[in-house]
Image (tube, rainbow, N blue to C red):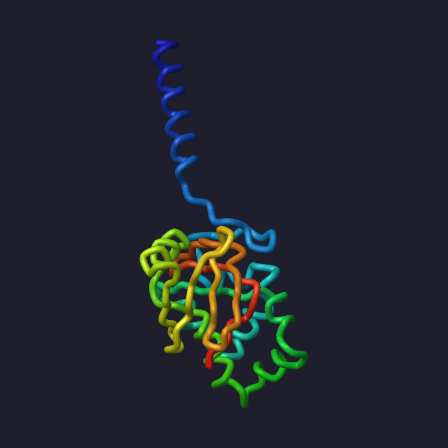
Amino acid sequence: MKKTFLAVLAVAALAVTSLSAHAQKDPDVGGAAMYANKTIVENAANSPIHKTLVAAVKAAGLVDTLNGPGPFTVFAPTDDAFAKLPAGTVETLVKPENKDTLVKILTYHVVSGKVSAKELEKMIKKGGGKATLKTVQGEDLTATTSGGKIILTDAKGGTATVTTADVFQSNGVIHVIDTVLMPN
């Protein structure tokens, strides 16, 4: 009886260990835990390095959209990425009279569907070294790889590097980027 109980206990422990090893854990973003059962907006709001992005999404009136079912792939610029913009740019963009421009810039960071880094790398390989992504805004982003990193090139020739990939959400996936992308 004791041996049977120990055998069952050992099998149960192995099963739990195996499930834990295979369970997907999102990477932390800015030191904050991200949860696959939360929406893009809910997780971004918890990220200490996405305060500017969250404020911009609110100013643009996109909270309900990005809390919606999606799925969406969001290339999420950090606060440091927004800080690279010329002085006063963010403050100007979040003003009500500039909402259309802000929406255009933010939706340029969103692609319909849930595209993981692995899928994006396959698309790049299949495309002979580059993949073209149609953004929700309507213009294209170009994805390539360099030094094992995914690089995005915007409509104006600017580039952003994916610094944290595959932050899965209930309604899509976030890939953290180091530069704000700009449409035409």
